[in-house]
Length: 324
Image (cartoon, rainbow, N blue to C red):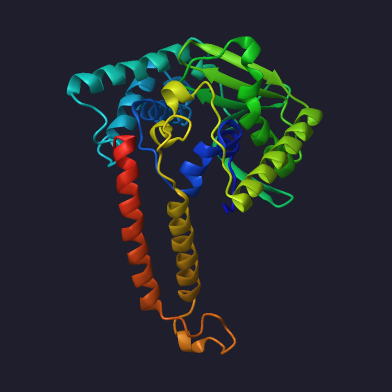
């Protein structure tokens, strides 16, 4: 059972419990793709821009910050094999610069002063630990808080916009609970087509979001208890779901990942025991009544090694289907 939930994880479960399981329970990691790398680099450039004095926030500086942000991470393992050629990387970079050009059509960085950026928010709602990082928080001329999120994709049609605010409602809920102030507005900035969607909020809306997230949390707990994470067809299945090749909706012979889940949970359990043992310099200092007293640390480490080998064997078969 997971211990914490982020707004993005909650949205993922709401969209497709099976995808949630693959990612968060079975720990089948989705490799960074071109879209994710672009979004991360664009976000970093915008964050770095607003760390500068107002008069330095020019388009040229913003574009240079994008290049610098990419230069800092392009050699990382998760990014190193993203491109087949230099030309592909250049085209990708130009697309990122275009997104930032589109952003500058929407806001003037020299006239805007964010209250906070990349704010880490967390809180407990009953037995749920909810946490995450919001992109930006602004304050209007009347002192009202505005929660802002950058999206590198394309804005949906206006009539479909409200479901996209679910994660931001949760951030606003956490902000209200943390500082006792209800944000006035949520803002989604879509860079692909230079569009801003906003939503005025109040305490009633946040209370409704609280009820909804607790309902989702209960569904997650039930899913863990019954080991039932149904696959749900949605608009993202066709082109955007990495796990589609191992999804039973699209592959009737897809391998079961239940054994993988068991191994992952066992490894986590052993690591928790090892972490507890590391708190003591000498195991002999433990009282005789302690369940940690007679544990053989070397045997635990050997068990983890054996489980890791078994896990890698299962992942090898799964990764063949995923094309990794």
